[in-house]
Figure 1: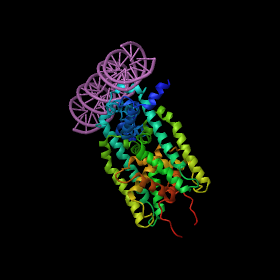
Figure 2: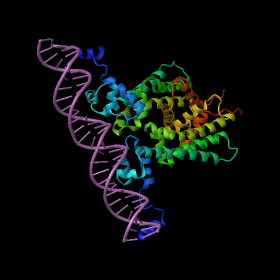
Figure 3: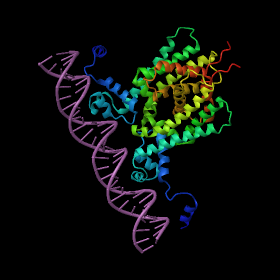
Figure 4: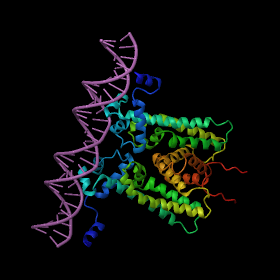
Length: 209
Length: 209
DNA sequence: CCAATTACCTAACAGGTGTTAGTTAGGCAA
DNA sequence: TTGCCTAACTAACACCTGTTAGGTAATTGG
């Protein structure tokens, strides 16, 4: 009885696992090992339950990865949107871009297994699951395209760069970081600064001609 | 002994498939579908033989992906090295970098399923297979680091950029192209030029202050 | 012509896969 | 107490996986 009361007072659900617990574990495993190598039995074991029990919370394996992918994209999208809209009015183009780049990278490297899982396994999941995630993806891509177009219209970005292509290159570069970034070797913050430096001004030493 | 060698070198193999045929098919499937989704039976079917027959040419599935990964890295490495060393002496830093970027991208997008398969599945493959590929990978990475260090020492590259980090960012960005590039939408050649433009000079419109 | 080699085939193996059906134990409302 | 709800369980299913053993037809060097 004391147990029951204690449980009620805290916000801990009766079960130590639950739907969210399964999802958290799944996101972590997918990020670490890739889609094909993670079976329902592995997820169940890591979550401390049995494989069949997963079907109380989810209708299929696809439903699990779909949920992971969706949560992941939303996390990055929200992080980036908020970082940009939190800037004071009149912020310069360079600072805006630095904020957006920083937010995207932070979402991947610091914040959540969901975001990184999305990036890493998207190319490996069944087409139907990819398709289900496309709406959310396109919304995030549109956010970037809007931002970049606005900056280009203001004259801050070079006019000869195609926005769609620039966005693909930029986000692709940031996402690729997941394949090699090691937090022991440097902070996500410093890395984000380097990315911004390179993309904004390039790596060539400027000639004074 | 010499006879056997001569036969192997001169004559077209009797079979329409053979070890190389299996390898070609495997590289294509791995590139298209990822490591986990490609079974030996799928490879065999696409090659026009039966699953068991693969074991005449290879000792295990791991041996197949190891061969694919190895061929892939070598193809990119050779392409990049030759493109750079084919430049006339006295070629400027910018032209050298453009040549290297172009060669890397061409190897991924135009030349060979092996290169693109390497990039796409490396992160999904069993650790032992990754480890076996590391020597070849490191050799290619060293080639880039040498190139970039030389250019930096010559004063062509900014001095505040860490070479290792720059190489990871640059190759990562180029490799990410595989996830979205559509040859119907533009040539690899034009894309390579855009990558060079962005990385060398950045995307900010230069202010004339 | 013979023997060996090459490149395939068939059939089976043990184990892993996603998924389903039926069961159980505890908490809660009436 | 009764009966429902929640969140798990066990056991099995049909299928797929990498892999092995043994067999076969065609080609070739001696």
